[in-house]
Length: 129
Image 1 (spheres, one colour):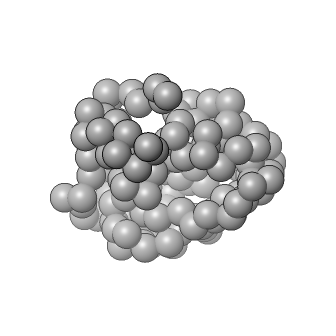
Image 2 (image 1 turned 45 degrees about the vertical axis):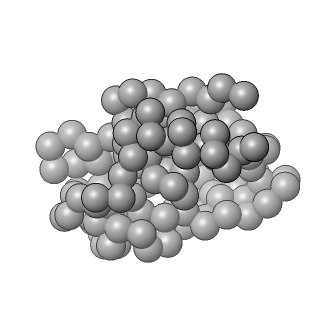
């Protein structure tokens, strides 16, 4: 099955995406992740001002099928949490790369664990079969 994997983003093996623009980054979950979860019913995001290291848990997403932790793809300080996706978690299913973004972060350190779109697609294919 093919998933939407925009080439301008970087991905983690825990299925988050990140778009880094200068010292700021936008973070969300991948199309594969939302598809695997099914209908998302609840999302928990951190407070603005909180700081996280890459690889640490920053929140959780719950669906009708499962609950899953969310992991920071990079180190940074939260500058905005998407209130719209907290109020309407189904946005993660309908538009994971647009209206369904989760966080905006001031980047304090990048991660060398990030995958480009091609590497992420290969990874997803390796675990999906």
